[in-house]
Image: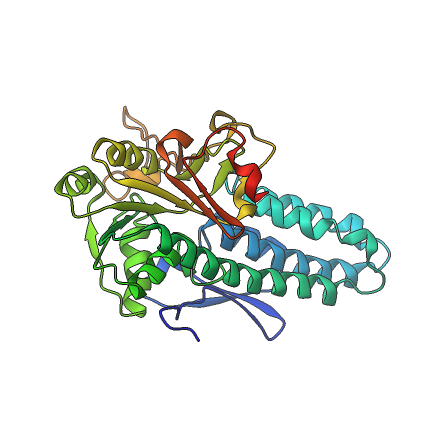
Length: 342
């Protein structure tokens, strides 16, 4: 059954990876074919594919494509040759830990493989893709149960099917909550790429779930109104103490939520937890080109005009009421809290 779950941004068929170009949504629905790891890395870097779980899944398929190319070049040396492909994939986006998790998981199987590695690596990628969808459904139900009698939800950025293998993390909770009686769903625009306006609303529209768009700067006034009881977001990386990196603006929402008695939920698979990082201060925050903010008003920075464009921020664990994973729920996260879902 795929009720309220009609979007798939990542597809494998005809021996190639197909990615929905999310830069063109909602005006165009266009899938592009990828046959090399280098092009998959470029798709991640250019944000054709985005969202931490989706980046990890795309990278896993990218490894399978790289193995096919390198094994054809030299069946004896493919393990050495493929390292350059893994480096290109790893360099595509620095903040989403799922990318590095996927690459290391794939690399861990290299030494046990004999003969052509492609069928085994492709099967791993396909299985992780399916596992991600199943995990999202579990998180959706777990998160929906936490909402209690809440009638209004606010989400930021896009943490839905477009950002995952399917169903979504934060949007998975919202999909499940809609089935269970939540009445009002709000989404921020999410500047500067407008993932909330272009992607989240489009996803919900595909599933015939009504939603209301707000400007990012309207969030405080909305929370003050009492129309929202929970803010529900995804995560690109979670430190071991529960500090969470997510789309820029999440930290501000968490502060506003605490001020107005609104609860804050982070929904992410355990692959988003970076056990090597003790706290959020150590999370590398990606900064993108100033032109993403300046255009179309100014052609480029210079002549006294510049822009600061961090893509993510870090919300401290003490501003988060619940972290929902596929292995369980952690409420009121703090030091060592995530060991329960490791």
